[in-house]
Image (cartoon, rainbow, N blue to C red; front, side, top):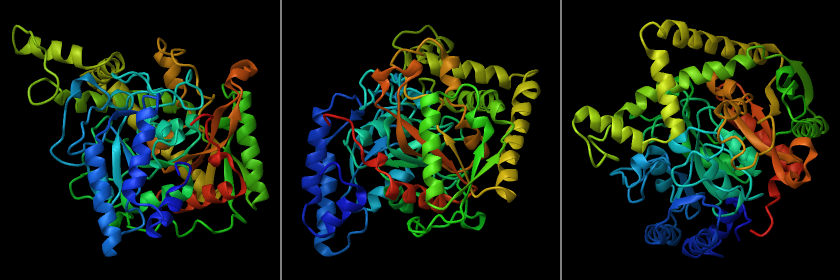
Length: 495
């Protein structure tokens, strides 16, 4: 049952061959037996109550496509009833009085929340090792990282602990863990999915999206995720192109004539041979499906890392200033005065990576450095976006390349080298800085560094990037590839 897709589960539920209660109990049992540390908070009573409500909708004929299907929520989305920690000691026992818009919409669709999944603290990280509640283990290899920050979401899907999961992507945090765990994930155009109730990291970059087994499943989830929200000032309006639409409408379109841009910058120094081999093979499969490969250049790609690691920490410094021990969250137990309380609360509540980014962000926003760093980074951000527009204008319809330079590394390998972690985001950051939609689909397996066969079962992800509001096209491209291959159907042993 747990190997079935959302579409298959929905068909079984609507045919009344299984109840939502039975399905929910099945997944809850798998979560309880799992040793991946993917889930941070599970409440069987709350989940089963939602399942019973879903079964009632089937009985009275009001069930929709997603009714009764279980889902896990990244613990960055606030949820009424479940704890919301953001992977931090700062919010270890916080329970929100309201639901995030994304959670609210899936609740309205009748989906059943299985619980909250692990993540890098405040979504800051590429390995899930920054969680205050211990890292998630990659289901393909317990020694490997699952990617981050949405590592819990990707691992939950890979381990078949849930058929669907919400996630967020600031600089690659949907695409990279999806790649490392061999599942499918999509980051929509910035502003398409509401950020209301999503605990903020970098407000001009954070974007919610789904992770699931297949592109078709992601399309079904996006149907309910996308839409304008008056409570979110960064939410795009219908007049700006953010329309409620059926993301499954183009899934079965042939790929004949599709122009695929292949950036030279994505295949240069630093890309592991095993990853390149898998990605090149995927590109050849698209040629067999009728597409044409076009060489393109995205010359500002190398600048995306310094640009991102100026803008994102600056926004984090501002957003995380609210966690001061006064209103909610952790507060130091002993302090001399208000200033001492602030210092001790934040020192105790935030982990090392969050502290590092706050300090970097505060520095670049200081008088005397704002113009030299932050303003210049914003200018380069525009140039990065212009590179993509030049490619989409007359050269290609979509852009493809690797998601990450290597397969998942071992837990602890880069724990003391934050720069090495940052460099692993080289192929995903520019898409986020430009606000473009991008996705990752599984396309093979790598052998790891130096052909190490211990890592031969670590997945490789293919990145597909589109122009603004082209999510339906991306999902069509991914779906056609998945109809022709079986990488997305493969699952780790002993799950």
